[in-house]
Amino acid sequence: LLLLCYAEEEAVIVSGLKNTDVFVGESATFTCELSHPGVKNVQWWLDGSPLHNNFVTEISEQDGMIHTLTLNDVACHDSGTVTFRAGSLISSAKLLVKGILLLE
Image (tube, rainbow, N blue to C red; front, side):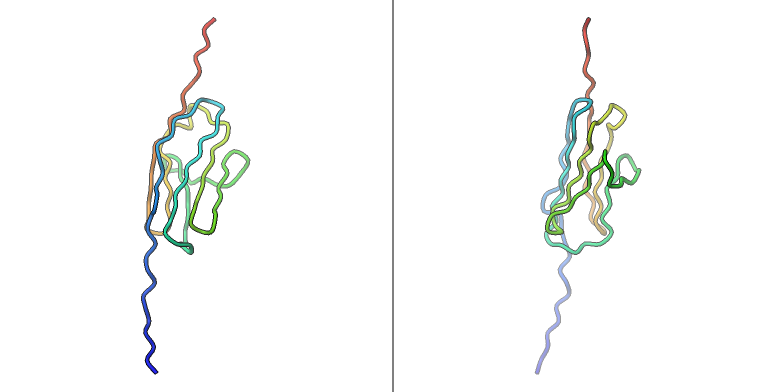
C-alpha cells in the first residue's frame, strides 16, 4: 500500500481590496476573497492600527474565503489605507472620506 502525501496548497488572494470614496456619514465596505478557507491570523488594519469588530467596525467572513470589513458612519479622519492580512497574504486599498460643503 502506497500513501501519497501532498503539501497543502497555499491560499492566494483571488480578488483584493479596491479603493473606495464615500461621503461623511456613509458606510465604506472592503472585501477580499481568498482561494480557500482555513487561513490563520486574519486581521484588518486602518493606517497601521488594528481594527476590531464593534458597532462602527463590522468584520465578517463568508465560507472562510470572503472577508468583509464595513466601516459605518465614517468621518474625515477615517481616510487612510485599509489593509487586510491573512497569514502572509496582504491586500491594501485607500479609503477617501469626502466632506460635504454646505453653502449658506
